[in-house]
Image (cartoon, rainbow, N blue to C red):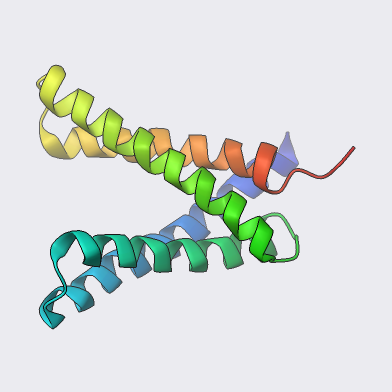
Length: 126
């Protein structure tokens, strides 16, 4: 339990760095004339690379591989769907304000992504 809590705290740090890369990259790409959806996708992908490398090395002490990144990207994509789904559900169906809905979506995605990383992406064979 203590090990998982430590991993989750380190994962929060890597997720924070990835969020900075995502938002910062998005802010840098927009003025270049890249369409908004493409800028959002590119910054998200850049953030997943940074997040994967940091998570592999610092959270799970695992080697970074292309296969591992593919699994990580799949898990991150599922987390993105949960984030958007929860945000949309809160804002449109439950009538919550957009920002609190997004905070809930981010929280759900954080725990889902951590669980997917621990149980799928970086699971050690038993």
